[in-house]
Length: 175
Image 1 (cartoon, helix red, strand yellow):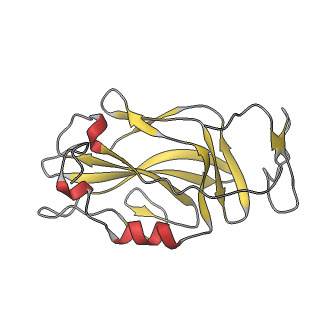
Image 2 (image 1 turned 120 degrees about the vertical axis):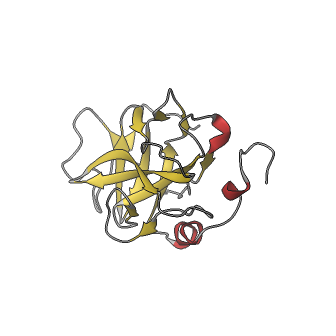
């Protein structure tokens, strides 16, 4: 594996990797980098996602609570989840495999399932213990291009950038 990562399990592609690469219905427009925080948290930077034809914004950085560590290594996958038109960031985990930890499955969104209709994958956090280090985090963001001029003021329409709703966010700079 890359010497910047903690374990070879982080370098192995999983079925989720192929699903997010092939899913062009969603991705990150800007920001949303996941960094190590004080245990039991990681920090997600503010940013914007595109999902199923709409743009959604996480206005400010947020802490995500990681899954409690037991005795076996596992992955927490950090996703930006859209619920009722708002973005929240959550940890989704699969703590059931002992010898070869895998990413959570896909299906209907829950604490152990990633739903590509409501979730945009941001990062995978390798969990060999209760501590979190930068080398435990693998960036999984898939950036999507946007050709729309999007303008945002203090009052965003209820559709938050849905089809036929154009807005420009003038407060963000390219990063």
